Image 1 (cartoon, helix red, strand yellow):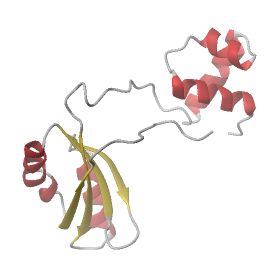
Image 2 (cartoon, rainbow, N blue to C red; image 1 turned 30 degrees about the vertical axis):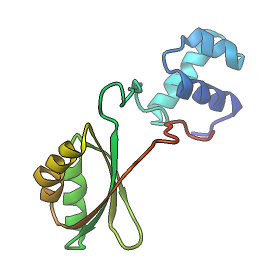
Image 3 (cartoon, helix red, strand yellow; image 1 turned 180 degrees about the vertical axis):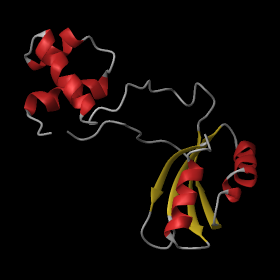
Image 4 (tube, rainbow, N blue to C red; image 1 turned 60 degrees about the vertical axis):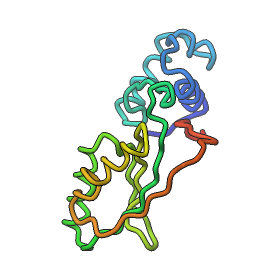
Length: 152
């Protein structure tokens, strides 16, 4: 799907406030309600917009300890990679999982409420993921920036 400036404007608005009324979005980008709704629907169908999610305040929910975990697998086969990736989906503390180039195979972002909870997660879950050979954990001291907004 080819996006024009109006589509990009709609996406910018939705990234900032996905609860905004379609008529208000349309007004901001110069469309009436129905054409704006059609564009949003088309972007949903194309997979450009993937659901509507609330952004939660991790600190207020006492889940403000972020750990970046580098993982090196003990085996490098398509099956091992697939098994590891599939298993990460079942660990709620893992918010993100990236395949990496370089020394480590994966980078995980893990969120918990305390160092003790991280110890439980690493011993009880992370080290039990398929083919984990080695982990290297780095605790974030401060979150200087965290956004879900793509640079459109």
